Structures are given as structure tokens and as C-alpha cells.
Length: 64
Image (tube, rainbow, N blue to C red; front, side, top):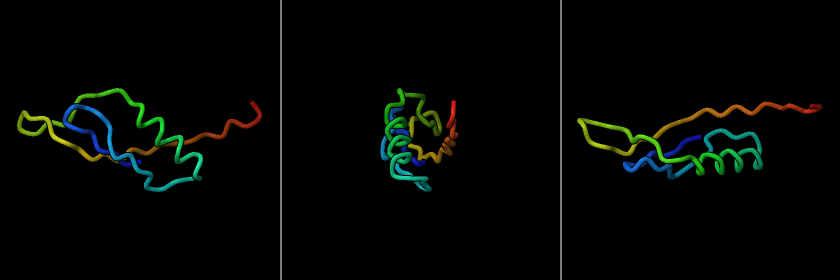
């Protein structure tokens, strides 16, 4: 997953870089978009926009 962390700590522009299926891609995007605000990136003491790539792993727990 790729996303932009804005100066205010919000998550924007969520994109799937390498997906598994339409359903899992949509779910990963949905969950990432629900993320609470966090500390923004800082450069020379100022908040800046930062692009992050975040690997997400899915585990198949069939039969449990």
C-alpha cells in the first residue's frame, strides 16, 4: 500500500501497489483510510507531507 501522510497527520491518496484480489485490496484500502491522525513527517522543525509504502500481510485462517 502507498499513501500520503499530510501535514496535519491525516492519511490521503491510498493506493494498492501490488494486490492479491479486488476484495483484499479494497479491504486494505478501507482500513488504512480509517487510520487515526498520527504525527506528521518533520523537516527542519516543520511538518511536511510524506509518501509511505506500507506492506500488509494477509493470513488465511481457514478451518478455525
